[in-house]
Length: 84
Image (cartoon, rainbow, N blue to C red; front, side, top):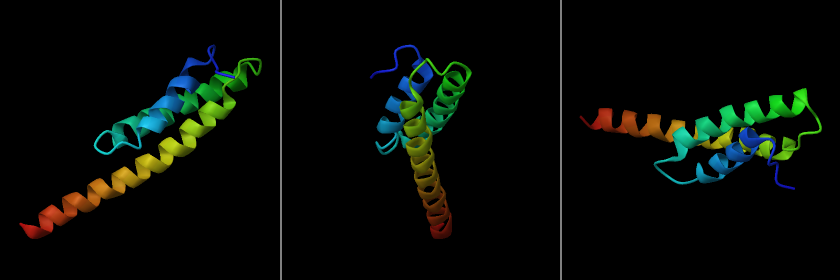
């Protein structure tokens, strides 16, 4: 069940889950998307290597958290700039 032979998918999955943590979410989300894409490519090249679900989770959850944390960062910067 755990894709030991598809390390990018596995690590991307963990990075995506940990990207839900505030302050660390943006860099971890970006990393999850990159690793998820690498894991999907590795699975596509050799379908006997498992990890498609982990890679897909990394892509989707990492993409969502990257978008959310990115928007919050921009809104925070704009709010601080508007005060000053």
